[in-house]
Amino acid sequence: MLRRYALAIGWTLLILAGCSIPGNDIPDVGFDLFEQDKLIHFTFFLVYGLLWSRALPDTVPGKFAWVGISGILYGVGTEIYQGMLPWDRTPDPMDAMANMTGLLIAILYYGLRK
Image (cartoon, rainbow, N blue to C red; front, side):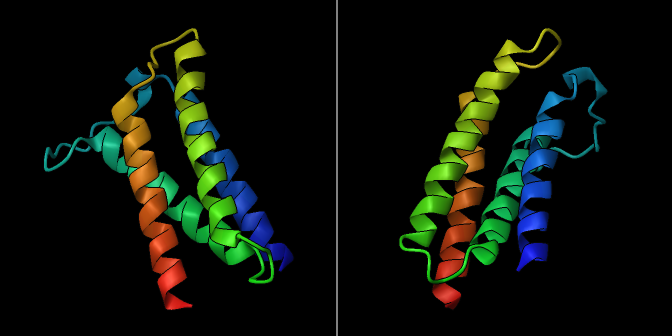
């Protein structure tokens, strides 16, 4: 149980670190199937949703609501945070949408397998 919390907390902090990197320092992977930035945000919050859904015990009332609400607040909060940074990071509503899409898919996946 402690390991699950540690992974979820570690990933949450990794998201914050990733959102703090100056935009010019993020490497370009060289494909345009989807915007690289949106895929990163989607993946960050997909994993966030999976890890927190797994970390919280099933006995927590409204477990998936807690994961969803905390993820939405964190996803929007990271966008606001990026707008406050003094270097090349800007808030983007489409990043917030990618965050929420990844989060929703994680919650649906985890919730439907139970």
